Length: 78
Image 1 (cartoon, rainbow, N blue to C red):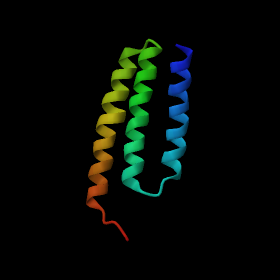
Image 2 (cartoon, rainbow, N blue to C red; image 1 turned 135 degrees about the horizontal axis):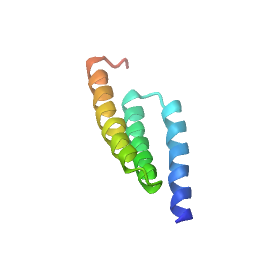
Image 3 (tube, one colour; image 1 turned 30 degrees about the horizontal axis):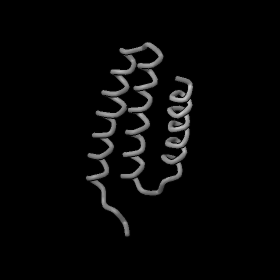
């Protein structure tokens, strides 16, 4: 189990740095959605299923949808 904990924590750190450093907004939103899903898994492992469901629904679901809708309304500069 500690190996899984280490892998999930490492993924969170790498994805947080990747979101901060990426220049493409769409890539940042996708990485952020993956971050939220892994965070929901961690909440579930910690024994907080209500927080895990909320994180999965709001963090990975609604927030990602709103970010994608916002990006679709903007223009990309080449």
